[in-house]
Length: 431
Image (cartoon, rainbow, N blue to C red; front, side, top):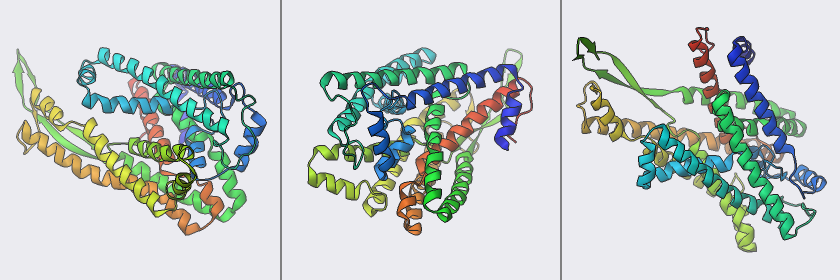
């Protein structure tokens, strides 16, 4: 009902209606590329194998790629190479002085960083596409599939598939940038949101067929989980900042108060993506290490119900949460900017004491934020243990990653539409 009200009010504004239709058209084009098979792929064999396969890593890849990667489609890699490249560039900006200087140069430096991100995206796409096609060629991409997925496993045919997937990644990157420039919301985030939402109907229908009672329980728990995520994602600590009055010519400036919004989940979804990627790598490399290594990885790092998997999952999420917050929020830089414009935190001296206070507040917020991400990631695994239903365990769609993506992207998009409505003197819908 709320979404219907949002669309009704947004479509009343001609300019906003054009942006929404443009965004929906590109999203439809993106989904078309995700269901279109790459040249040389046996579509019948892929459909049979995907329909009969299930399991921890399989379902995670299906959910995060919108079912495109394991179908070997043109847009099989989706937005993950670009997202990974963006995160890597943010991390490199901390250790590479040149990138740090570009980040501080404004729009010109950001354009250069975006160019580097595109190059890195292409490199990652080549690696990802090569790995996926190599696994498909060796018959190890889909578990329990004895049929060959490629019509021709020659070098030229494999190179064509890899080149098609890399070109598809470049096209996805272009679509995301077009949505950001001419549409509504962040393009890459919306495409990731589309990937996750696209497979939800199939997952929910499987759960309903296996167990209607489990379906009802999961829908109820999923709604409660989404409400809790919305509450935490909106929670923030507002650090007050006051500005002293000063005379510039004949005018008085300052004398007003504002605040620094510091979110409880300052890291967002990045720790979960990092952790999922790291836990995916051992499983991906296990077939190349031998039968014993593959069996150990499948037992300990693939099944979500294993204690070692749960422990490693939570610890990595907490570690990445602290690490990412530390590199994205610099208390010293924020304190210097406050002092430069004549501001101060009430009760705290400007300069180093303000930086120490901000670092203290940030550390106090990161702890519950990391705990929140860990609990959110473990919640589906605990639900598996309680339900003790293997079918629902394999098709549980309300994972921490999917819920964070849906809620986070949905809230950001709604806020952007709200801000554009307010700029045109229309009453918004976020109250």
